[in-house]
Length: 406
Image 1 (cartoon, rainbow, N blue to C red):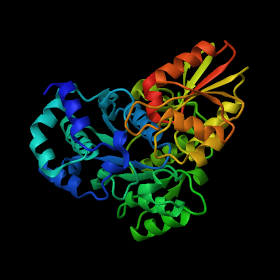
Image 2: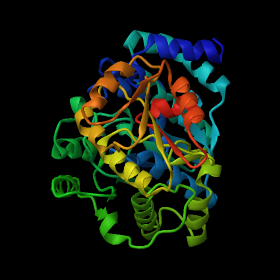
Image 3: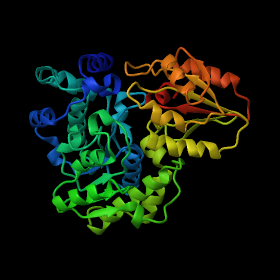
């Protein structure tokens, strides 16, 4: 199969949470363990940093990768979901895995995938681990897909575990309380391996402490330990906490003499994070007059910070291009959006996308008024045509909405 045929097969033949949602979620790691054994257990040959959390794990992973690249390490980075191209998920020093490698891996292992009915994510994890071994990476940043305890990435034994924060998201899988979600994410804490917690609330701190005690792991709360940070190319307000999480993680790695990183490496890594890792969609400015901002925040925990930052901006009129997936709790996120804005409701072009007419009807109850558009690009185009040069256009609500305009 060529690359396009390979992707078509992967996206259509295998359960894929990114597009299908609940039907693709696997509540154990049996398949991943089987796949790892089939591949010769590549994860056992990798040095890793494991990153979980409701929000910020993508930015935190990219910041860590950038700093380590600046320090001269060859860095593997595994993240999800992708925005434009599947190969964004698996990179070595910022360079995506080759199309040929993806095609060869899938073709070679296709009988095994089909025999064991592996999910899209399980297969991707196996591909990443095998690729990083082939690339002879020095260190690998592995971002959890969802949760932690039962996530496919949780077959690694990392140098350090990182949990950015806990919010209510994916509650149908992870539980509907902060304590329950914290328990799932704390599942990446391994025996005698240190853990850094980015942010905590009264409900989640005891969960982390109990798990760390059980595994005899040193635990570090970054929000209590780090006061100053450095400037970064990532300028969203929420990046302040992500930077603290990264600084605390690096501090632990340095003190344990696991990695050698200078202050200049950290400063350069923060400033060059987009150049080094190609991260997109985090408070990303796409235009000046009118100012256009897109952001992948998609749950109450993330949107609250982003929408607060939006209100600090100066503009004559605010235009919001909004689309969501069908498993979001609209009663929780819609009240966060400003009433004094023109809305352009749309549906991301994936099976999980919520119909724009339903979103519009739900939004009216919260005083959010706007029209329905046939696609994200159509909504975005109309917003640009309607906006004056001193207006502001915000595009968001879902990672998949942002992906369609980049």
